Image 1 (cartoon, helix red, strand yellow):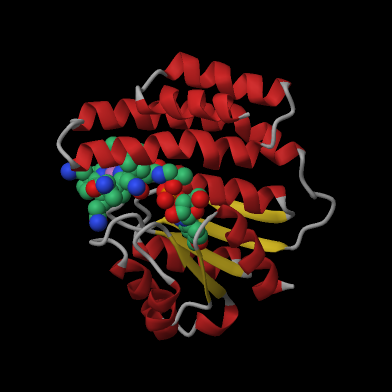
Image 2 (image 1 turned 90 degrees about the vertical axis):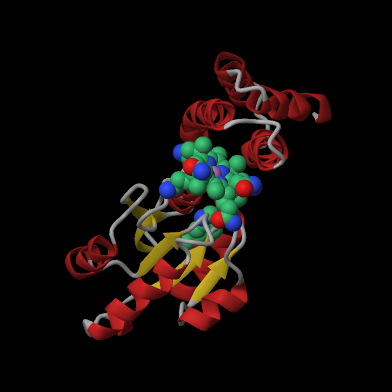
Length: 213
Ligand code: B1M
């Protein structure tokens, strides 16, 4: 398994899309634990690509190739993640998106997939979602849970902004709010008045369960 995970990591790190897709398909065929393949393989590759970029050893196009390889692999894995799930009942409606000004969507999509795989009705608004859109969707969709992801220190403040707008609009008591994404923490969630924080997709499901069930 370690060798397989190392190959997944390398395929993403080197931006080898076809190889990443083949490895993802093979993980499905072999019945591997898909979360282990994502967290222990593909995700490690994308995070290493980010480190190389930070050190100036990778340029943006290389980082983008790695991200594309990761996204393509995730698309192959997604049906498998959903299949192995508990979908017999709906635990509640969730609206999720990456906050305005932020185009990072890989982690958010993984969280959305895991929530759907665990019985939630998930409405994924995508990335770079305007603050006003989150408010509108809470008004119109009436979800039990609003999830906002932020990967940039410059965009995480937007999560607090949306919570303030929910308060101003008299909507705050109608919906629980969970925040996440690499620069965020439990202390941050508390500071901005969110109901919950999760460090990864598995924790996000646990937190949603504890908030809603
Ligand atoms: Co960007 N980027 N990037 N990037 N990028 C980071 C975030 C950065 C840390 C890289 C670095 O410097 N080492 C850095 C941010 C620095 C900072 O703010 N402190 C950075 C930067 C600066 C930028 C640009 C500004 C670069 C530029 O243009 N100069 C630009 C942003 C443009 C914008 O958004 N306006 C940019 C662009 C890109 C790409 C397009 C090339 C690509 C994104 C592709 C895409 O998503 N479609 C990209 C990537 C891939 C990364 C890194 C390398 C990897 C992110 C990722 O996909 N991780 C990232 C470095 C890093 O994070 N170490 C980096 C894998 C994913 C599975 O994990 O997203 O953390 P993650 O999600 C996790 C948890 O965080 C959590 O669960 C997920 C699953 O375990 N989680 C939640 C996430 N959302 C959650 C929500 C929840 C709960 C948990 O509840 C609501």
